Image (cartoon, rainbow, N blue to C red):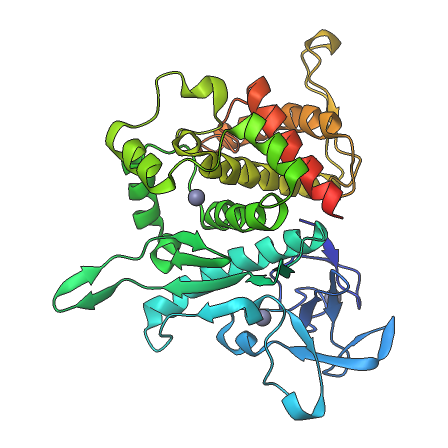
Length: 355
Ligand SMILES: [Zn+2]
Ligand SMILES: [Zn+2]
Ligand SMILES: [Zn+2]
């Protein structure tokens, strides 16, 4: 994520801020410019488009969004921003717990949309006469006739369902433990599920991409339901680490792709943050250790994947060590094999080709 600046006082501000802590003016994110804008005299203007005025997205009133929409006479204060327009279902906000959890879900979703826009990935397309559009169901588990009906996080033709309970740390940690995962976050769920959507957008029906996909990930035509059933019954093969980025990735080529896609997004976002802060490491172990790294490039614009991955791996030595200093688990708790890197490189190539 970029580090932003208040357009009024030039203080550094963050993506989620709605107010500058220095000059106290209201702040908002303008998605078409990928910039934070500071309000002057109570209204938001973007100098490059000085005819237009902007107002907060409707979800700002729930403190769930700080993005802007164009102010037009007929929709003053009634319009959803480009990220919130994608919501198909949101939970019942009269329940305080739902509101609290949904805000966290929205925080992660807005970060996801920011990245997708930086990759120039479409949020909807028409493919061979079929509309494919990204949308979200944010659902809370409901009690029906005394029984809790669980919500399964998942994806179906662009509609992503997220169980809002994933915003609860106790629930998330216990699921992580139960599923023997190394990493589980709301943002991670979004990145994984959106990977399924972009498989349909970028791979399905594209003969070149599909062929390369099959070589790396396997045949996507194998029965998905059966493959998952088999995985939940028997777990991953003992040697899964040689070929897969995570255990779950071994269940079916689609899941392998979605897991790889999520990791690609983790890597690029982390590098962008490091780039924004001008991070450079020179570990005091001497040059021979070859652990020096400098993130002096915008990863969203970088063509050379070997540069991305080499600098990232070196950066994770420092990041993991910093986390350990705070008694936290490693920031990136994965060891990437040559095969994982090949798959990540394929995701990189497919995204670039689409730009
Ligand atoms: Zn300011
Ligand atoms: Zn919004
Ligand atoms: Zn999946």
